[in-house]
Image (cartoon, rainbow, N blue to C red; front, side, top):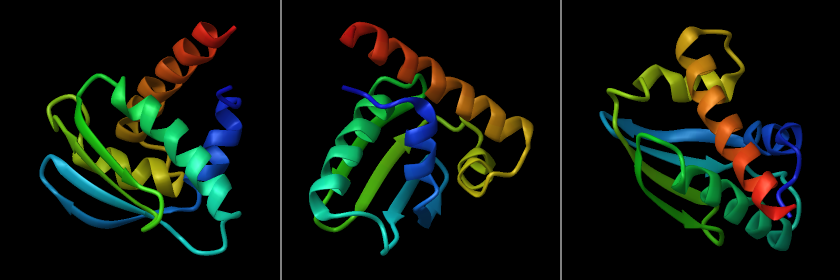
Amino acid sequence: MIPPFDELRDYLAHIRIVHHIHGRIRLKLVSGYESLAGRGRQARRFQSILDRTPGIHAVRVNPLARSCSVEYDPRLIPAEAWGDFLAGVDSPAAAALEQLLREIHGEIRHEEL
């Protein structure tokens, strides 16, 4: 079952951008997060949301390496949205990305009911 978005948001607070070029970003789960099993579950949940998000073309998650590569359309998701969203910066770009993720998260939770 997909957790509430706030729980997912807590997970995202442990993610850092390690590489970013136009249309492709690599994210890393920083140390200090819960067990490997927990990381795997959260990573799969995160991937299922990203896989269905408009503007995202491909997602590759490696739970053992604690990394995720995302190919996206920068016309739909501005490049600055990622950094702002993960850092908790209140910007229009971050708000747009969060709205997309919340909508998909809600759809997945609804399907599971």
